Length: 234
Image (tube, rainbow, N blue to C red; front, side, top):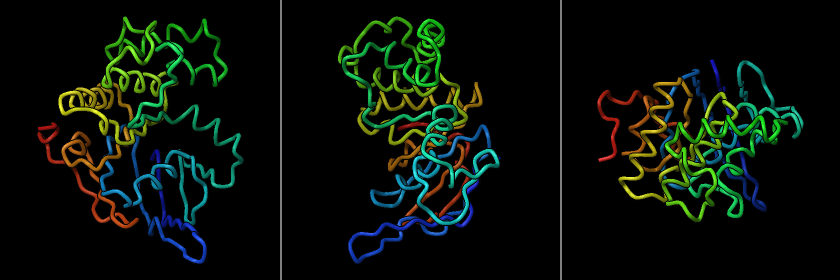
C-alpha cells in the first residue's frame, strides 16, 4: 500500500466560523494505480491533494505513506520526502520564464544535491520521454501551452517519484492537446508503472484513470473503477 488515509478530517477557521473541508476521508492508493479525483470547484479536491502530497499536516485522523506517518515531521523532513517521492504537475505549468527548458527540468535534481553534470543526462532522457528531445535550449515562451505542460511532466519525472499529482493538467489546454497530454500520463502509468493521482473537474479527462473518486462538499461520494475502453477525450 503506497498511500492510506483513515478517517481524515480537516477544518478551516475563518473568524468565528469553522468550515469542515474534508469529511471522514478513507482512501487507499496502491503503487502503480492511476487514480482520478473529480469534483466541482470548492469540493475539497485541493485540500485532499495537499494532504496526499505531504504539503498540509493540519488534519485529524491518520495518513500513511509507505506505511509511515509524517504528521509530526518538521518542515525540513517533509520537504526532503516531497522532493524524493512526489512529482507535481499544475494547470499553469509553473515554469521559470527566464530559465531554459533544461534548467527548469533539472531543478528537482539540483535541490536533491545532484551536480549539473550528473543531472544533464537524466534531464535529457526525461525530455525524450515527453517528446521534447530537441527543446532543452529553448525558453518556456518559445513553446506552446501543450509543450510547456510536457516540460512540467518531465520536471515531475526526473527524480523518479513514488507518485505524480497532476492538478487540472489540461485546464489551460484545448481538446486535442489535452488528449495528447493525458496519453503521456497513461503511457507513464501503463508502460512504466508510474502511480498517477489526477485531479480534474472534467468528466472526459477523468476517464483516463483506472479508478474514479468523486468528491463533493469535502466527502468521498463514490469510489469506482473506470469502465474498460472509455479512456479517451471525445
